[in-house]
Length: 358
Ligand SMILES: Cc1ncc(COP(=O)(O)O)c(C=O)c1O
Image 1 (spheres, rainbow, N blue to C red):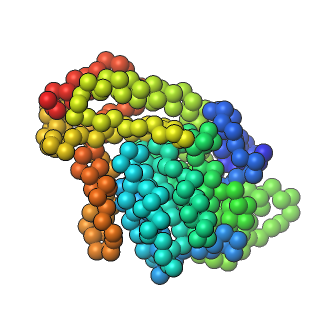
Image 2 (image 1 turned 90 degrees about the vertical axis):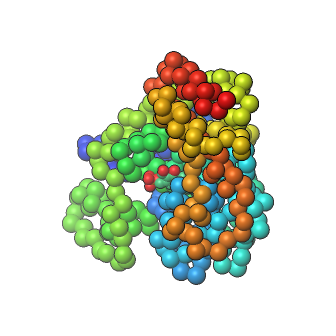
Image 3 (image 1 turned 135 degrees about the vertical axis):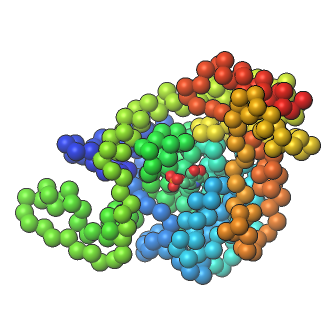
């Protein structure tokens, strides 16, 4: 099965060990039968895939996400239409999605929030009925599965982040996957300033080849140094995921006695990579006071994922009510979780949370 590197080819290796295959092999998950290659972001044209998004178009996104999810829509002049989320998974609610389709809808972006698998089956079915593309925001979900298959293998395009707070990191940068070869080719061209023949292909051609620039492209390349770091990190993916999951299970147990704290779910038929572990505090608790008290006890926490529609940049956007999103945004609290965390640290976090919430 052919797999491409998401980024650049580290010097001296041709071709580099394909990263997606490495993910599939390493965590022993069935891969789909079609080859998948790498791609870029929202907002490109492709005759076969109908993922040409631009001014006048609408893209449905959950509001409960990092602002980057909606920004991707704005970059191409389209309008993000905010959908509410499920109260347990914090992910796009298919029922809310269904109500928001219009004649202008061109794509849907489900987010696997914090590494928790979104319920893709109904989302993909609704999008297919209406002939719109699905672009998965899997920024936090490297290694997350849905029906035992890795996320990033079902949508038109899936986007992963290698930012330092993600499951693996290359400092900055990311990876995109698609099983559409034409789309992948076009995105490779766009990645490198619209260069029609990539430099490595020209250099290895054995004859003189000149490239052309037929359309406006970008520099979206990861450096070779970052690619080399990413490949090494990828080898540790099983260990990193299993450590995160073990710590999450332990949090679930330790938090059980705390009546005013609801732990996150690990929803069937998906799994959770626990890029972050976010609990919900009871409505009558003052979250800021809880965070402040925990800080005084030496434990740093973070508030919930954003409700993008409440950010100043997006306040003017017309939208349906988003009650679940606003509840989660108000009550969500992220506890420290990282692979190097030891049980004693985790105990201290839970003690501080118990102190701050009782
Ligand atoms: C859900 C989500 N989408 C997109 C992004 C953006 O990823 P990057 O910073 O690699 O562009 C993030 C990063 O935090 C994220 O959490």
